[in-house]
Image (spheres, rainbow, N blue to C red):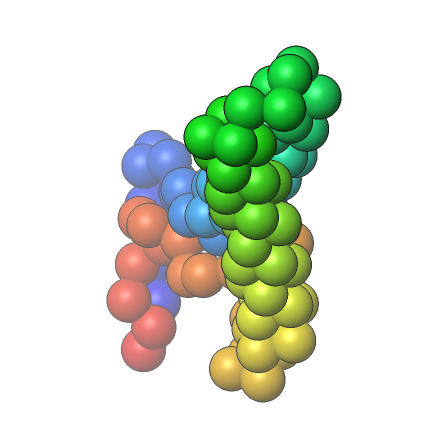
Amino acid sequence: MINNPVAPTYTIGPLISGLIGFFIFFASIAAFLYFIIGGIQWITSGGDKAQIETARNRIIQGVVGLIIIASVWAIVTLLFPAVGLSFPNITFPGIGQGLPG
């Protein structure tokens, strides 16, 4: 294998790992805020049936979002090792490292 000492080598694994972690974190915060906003809407509805229904739907959507996020986290944590990847330390061959041989 011939390596070019001048060309930089890039690893894409930490980038993908960081993106997955960021999206899981961001989605968790968004779903939690959606849940909180629904609760505040329910409290401030003043007994109006339409506003209570809207708040109830928002709370249900927040809970479903949290369930989906937990499922994605479980898939990443449990299935990545089954295919040879370890989260959060995903490693792929670096770009610019040359061809094996």
